[in-house]
Length: 284
Image (cartoon, helix red, strand yellow):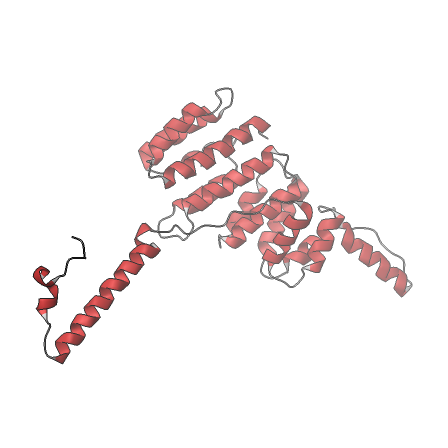
């Protein structure tokens, strides 16, 4: 796992890279300048140099990230790769915002539970491939073998079994309810037969959101437990669609309609447009 300062510098990279791309600066130029800004005591400057070299050769960043698995996680590579695909709806600005927030969360001390929910929501909100996406999610040092096995199981069962059920059954909340049900039925209660991955609070929230849209589950976890929220794409407002310009277009359309109406009545009176007939304001 990377040190805290590496995650902080990665967050800076993704944030500033997105800002400069939005400002119209070329990707290669932006990366070169960011490489000079980040801490030289981290490994990020060397990684950026490799990204720039790959960008010159192939025009992509994800290929370079895939060759640096010790520094960039497979999930980071997966997100950038999907953003670089032509014809896709997933925008590079959104991808960089996602990675920036994840790096910030990891610098603050991420938990396996919080990171899983964050990444799963990224896949859900942006309609990315669950199979490949969850495989990339699982390949991370923050997850132990039990977590990795469970995440791959979720990848096979997502869409068939509710996410709330998959989470609840791996929490103490499920076994508390099982124990209570056994006592009421007069039979002996059994303990958990699988590794507990989530806390009691996650289990209660998951049980309360069974059968609902998973986005409600993510939102509740963010409110109750402070898990990071996934950035949402903000549509860029084109200057050609400003209210003032639309108003001027509407005025021109009204003028054209009036001219057409006059022409239909028998002709356009051009004398109204003769500057000689315009009266000057009093006092001039």
